[in-house]
Length: 221
Image (cartoon, rainbow, N blue to C red; front, side, top):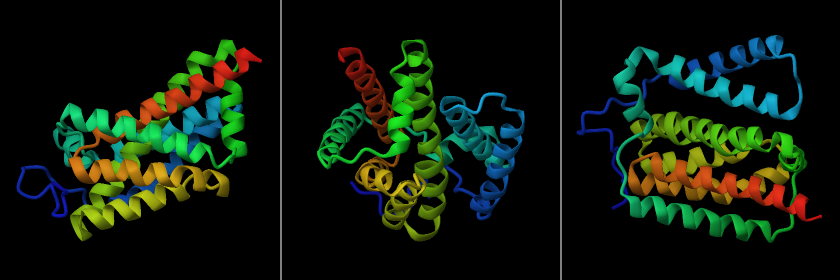
């Protein structure tokens, strides 16, 4: 069943507060600026780690007035059937393979995967790009933003707008083209399940496969 009605209504879960996007938009740059001032290593992996950590902290600060017990359900951390998780993960891999046939390789992706090809950096790369990045992106776009939009204009608007903004946040045009189909798929999983878990697991597996494939390709050369 598609959740066209707001799934937060009537199930005891509080909706994302009205001013949350504004608060997040103020807190996030402030945290990044402070982090950059303190960060001694400006290489790509520490920078990515800083950015995604700041995103998670910014969401926590934004929703802190809701209270700790209300935050996770409001972000979509609710039970989802394992079939939807498996379906979503397999679908994400199919979409990822499909868009890879376009032959587009964004510079940012090449730089990030270049770090993963260093054996000494592989574990750290996997943690940042296949765990931290998907967690932060899902919490921000399919959690905070989706929940805020859903509470006001419904799940279909939340799916479309959060997916488009997720793609746009990757800035580089080639990267936007590559991630838009995945963003639409992740948003669809959120729409169908009413939970963040299917899109989060699919996102983690997809990114993990990309990091591993990049590292194996380098080892084979």
